[in-house]
Length: 464
Ligand SMILES: [Zn+2]
Image 1 (tube, helix red, strand yellow):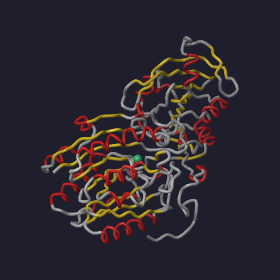
Image 2 (cartoon, rainbow, N blue to C red):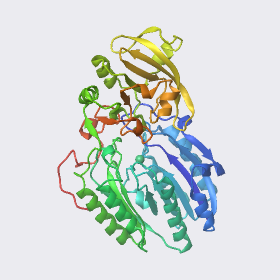
Image 3 (cartoon, rainbow, N blue to C red):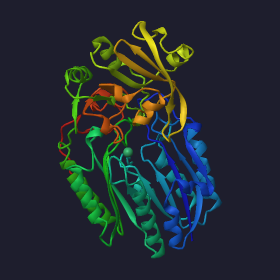
Image 4 (cartoon, rainbow, N blue to C red):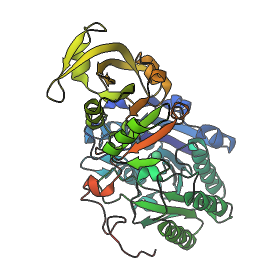
């Protein structure tokens, strides 16, 4: 018996401007996809023949253009067509890929696959915990397994859970049913962390449920509020031996998840940018980080907003200050040939005098060098401009930019929460509730296509 394996992922952000290009996808085909996916061993140990398709995964970006989407979707469909006799299909999706003119990229591809494979073929998916689940997704997939951790550290276990369930069902001739219940809330992404209550207990409950003989997976999906689409919300998905059992458990989990909607809090001080700047300047701590959450490049934003830089430049703190990773190709291009120490006039804030401080490189997501950075000093504030979108998630990013992180007392980065790698350098963390493509204030996002009522935009009762 054959199982076809593929992965196609890009977390979309409707407000972001840069659509992922074909070249933005990390791409493997054939056996090479198992450099990235762990399911091969599970399938082979269970005696299945594995048919690798493609692995195409891009960083969070704006919506995917139809051409780019179809380029990769067609390759997966070609493999399916070449193997119409496969007993199972396994795909690792994100779950929040929004495609122009198409909508949910996951649902569209699943429908196409279902048109080709036999009705008995079982389809298993692994999804990110921030997937926006369409109601129909469970009509086309038999097994759905989501991450149980935010921040995500269980990608491997999530793949194995789906793969093991798929093997078990195929070997025992079981047809599992997935059932989805949408939970009409969209909470501030950064307040949803599984190490803390109330999510901690709810996740533990899903783990306990999966120990029952008739339940294969039980999942909470927290949704991804930065896509303006009808399928955007939290949800629960349960896969069981019968539709009824899956529906009962999914509804119960949905009611429990809904009941927690008011219980999510930020884990650090979260304030408007002006207040964060005030607190950072007045703070007694050795080094204070501010995260520019509305322009979080790890959530698909461009990293090009200048709001916090402007506040700090105007304030001229008596503390060494750095704003790191501002996407501004023009500035890098314009002044790259200037020596360190030379004076320049930046084309921002109506013309700003600055001094070139350092030339450096941008460290990409997979630790490769992806471009150039130029750091300039505007009074007491250093600004690290990058010619491409970057994410300053660890000290190594500052090192590559030739900027000494340890020399600063105030540091601004374009993230939500600080990544674990930066936390040791932060004596205090301020979460700036800034505007931008990854703004965490739902009311400020101006979503028009989402289902209503939706908490917290609307106050209403809900029972699954
Ligand atoms: Zn996620």
